[in-house]
Image (cartoon, rainbow, N blue to C red; front, side, top):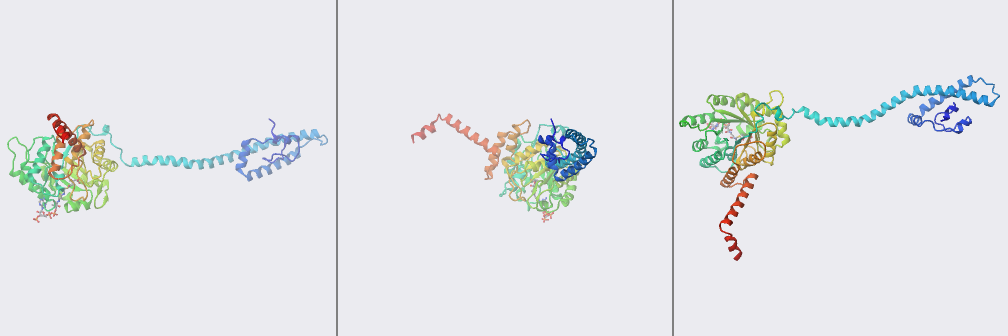
Length: 483
Ligand SMILES: CC(C)(COP(=O)([O-])OP(=O)([O-])OC[C@H]1O[C@@H](n2cnc3c(N)ncnc32)[C@H](O)[C@@H]1OP(=O)([O-])[O-])[C@@H](O)C(=O)NCCC(=O)NCCSC(=O)C[C@@](C)(O)CC(=O)[O-]
């Protein structure tokens, strides 16, 4: 292909027709499109530089002309040779001047492009970075030996946490009956009451009577809450004056001590700060252990405090550690207000279980209230992170006197229904527990808060009706149709 500019050294790049008027210029074609584009993109400075350079080259070419100048063909050829030489120089110039410019352009474009490109990975990195700040979720494979267990312990807290918030004072005989029925339904840990100040929680007065009245199954634990040395003294006095008969279990073999993750809740609940409560509990735990009692710990408001709002999970970890260091065999983490969601529960558990001094899931229990209907999913979240002990209350009984508006614990029946439909196992006869939830709700003149319990009782009512119809041969319906 004939290149237009080969024939005219004086043509400024980009000029489509040359003023030298040679025949070659008649076929002047657009030069290589790429160069034109580059020229355009580089603007006038490049053009003027090229033009002045070419003018200089043209002057050199003029000096090199050797022909006579008489023969127009010689002149044409001489001009053509000069043009060729100059074109070579021009190409060389273009070659050496264009690449730095191309590089500069490329750098500019790539910088432009790299902004959004960099932004995307940056955005994509954010969640990963956020995750890396939180210890990774423990999988079953990473759990300590024994925690791959399929067995879930249920701690039934209905007779204590459930009943302590009722408006009416419940007679010890009714409390004992509730405990008896729960024991017969196959539950293995049943909180039986509290040795707290009756001024503070009148519903728990008479726990000593309850312990004496209730059936004691040898393989069942009946923990009682103890807030201070006075409470433990009262319990030890009771145990001392009621020694077990030969081969029989004691009235109880376990206490539970409790504190909180915020000073505000701790003060409202026990009239002291967290630090004061831990100092107060230390000798209580030591004496209880000396006396052969098992000691469980509670931390309240692990997600949200009714007085100060969102709770720092690091504080939950710190208080949990303190209770374990004291000698508690397990610490139950209380979402007292029931404000927790799977996300906040997971964040809290990651913090408690992760990092230096992380608490293994075998030392933790989930104690979740169902105020916002999150109880079962929160339990599932805790189970998925390796916890294997869950506190529940039959019929979803309860609340906390110092957490206004909080409703009961997640219902035993709801958790058991979920577990029995899973690969996990838990003790307890679901049908019997549904009956107990229905019975105690009626006794207390309150709604049954267990969805599973209500569903089972609804099914049982339908089955009873059908049986009655079968038994009377449809007599009731025949009479009804004749009326
Ligand atoms: C801790 C105290 C006693 C401090 O209460 P205080 O008023 O600071 O106690 P005090 O030491 O100043 O004593 C005042 C009076 O109370 C008596 N007293 C003192 N202690 C006892 C005792 N143990 N049993 C019986 N009486 C007691 C003591 O003898 C004295 O009587 P006085 O000399 O004036 O006649 C009080 O605040 C208290 O009993 N709080 C318990 C509150 C409670 O039971 N809350 C519910 C349980 S926690 C909960 O539900 C949360 C949980 C566990 O479920 C998890 C969750 O969901 O978050």
